[in-house]
Amino acid sequence: MLPNTIIAIGQTISKRREVLKITQDRLSAISGVSLRTIREIEQGTGNPSLETLDKLLGILGLELIVRLKNKGLPTLGLMD
Image (cartoon, rainbow, N blue to C red; front, side, top):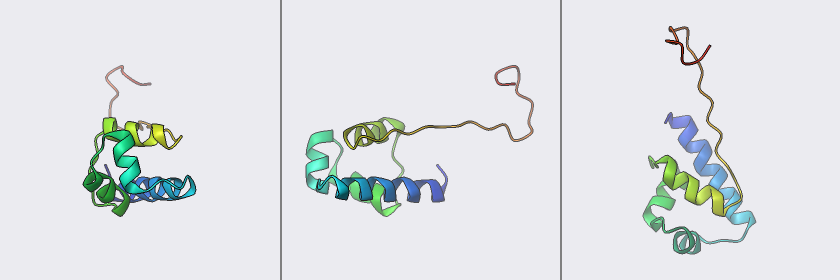
């Protein structure tokens, strides 16, 4: 993921968690994601898998929407 994207995702997770009054420890216990990983994501230094993000975002009532964009390269018939 791009650095700015990682930072934005981490900030969103942190803010939502705080709004819901869920500690990082509690989120870790509920999600099965390690406390270290949650801290790294929120600090923008982690590189979480989509599976990890899905676990955290689902608990927080958020969803990740991924948009693929063609940068002028041939699409090979996959996306027109």
